[in-house]
Image 1 (cartoon, rainbow, N blue to C red):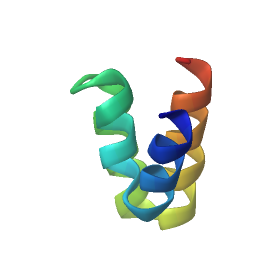
Image 2 (image 1 turned 90 degrees about the vertical axis):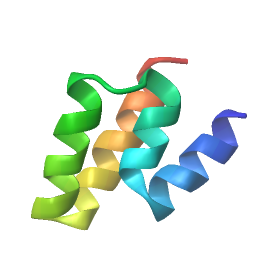
Image 3 (image 1 turned 180 degrees about the horizontal axis):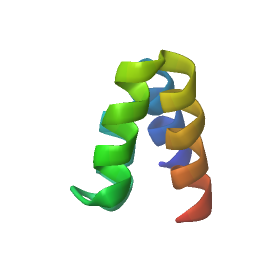
Image 4 (image 1 turned 45 degrees about the horizontal axis):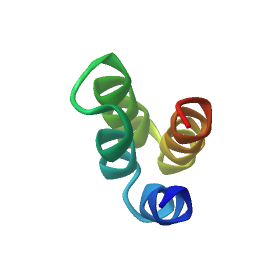
Length: 53
């Protein structure tokens, strides 16, 4: 299941974060990072998924 979340995080970072932690500070931060730059959003999403195993 974690692999699927990571694949989703690469395609659409906020969705990967949402599936892991729901709507909260990490979700909104990831949306902001994704708007500012797609790569920072991906890095943050993968970090959140890996941290919250």
